[in-house]
Image (cartoon, rainbow, N blue to C red; front, side, top):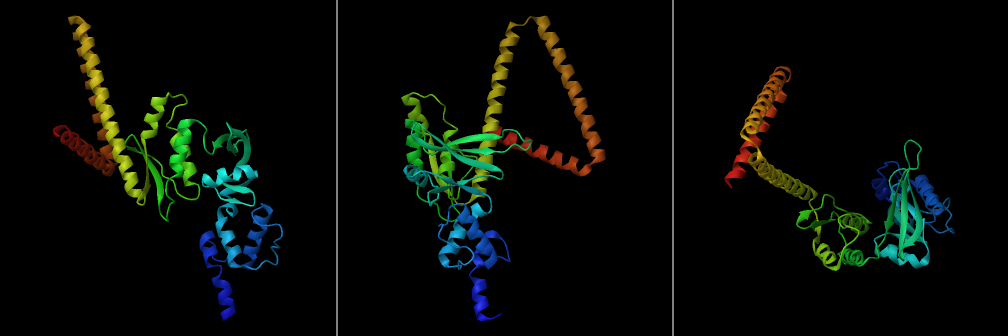
Length: 313
């Protein structure tokens, strides 16, 4: 390969990696420039057929690769709203904000909500129906929402491989957020925890319950989420068991001796039938699938050992 051809090949190496296309070259670059021009993200003065792949235009293609791949769409916005979109983490170019979308999802600008810019995304129904629409408000106007929005805006920018997450009353969030619109997605997710009507004291309590963190190791974060969910599940189960026992004690105190005896007979009969049913089920599984049976026995023994160890603590 000549030196000139090798240089022409090397300039598209980043775009090949971005689009995961080994044969990305001059023709595809010109098609992408033409598409971005049609969407309004490239100046009307640019001529795609004769445009050379300069560093500036290669960066433009990389910057809006999600638009070219159908993972985002440009939304025309008025000049007065551009600052709101920039502050919420959106890319703004030539009077258009880039909105992340899913496959088959459309986006349109709607009337501001209490003076705050907003847009709507609509997911088409596979059956040809109306579809599902979601309204996105950049920064809600209520006092608590505004404080949370400002709190999110103050967070330092993410570096490569970093994500935003949060703890709410000590519990880790199930999701974490990265990419260009991480702050907006984080804020939208945090809003789910807040009721519509709050007094001043409740609002302050909710505001102080959030803690935003930056994470690098998503596996460790997910592991922590699983552990806290398991702990919460065990606590709820123990709490429900205690409530049931208290209710049972009150019920027995109100029952006559005959009613107690009858209840005892029914309970014993049910336990015997259930035990027989479980024995038959285990015997059938042992005969049909010994490996699964052995795994279930091992898992059951581990749960029993863990439960006994927790009781000793």
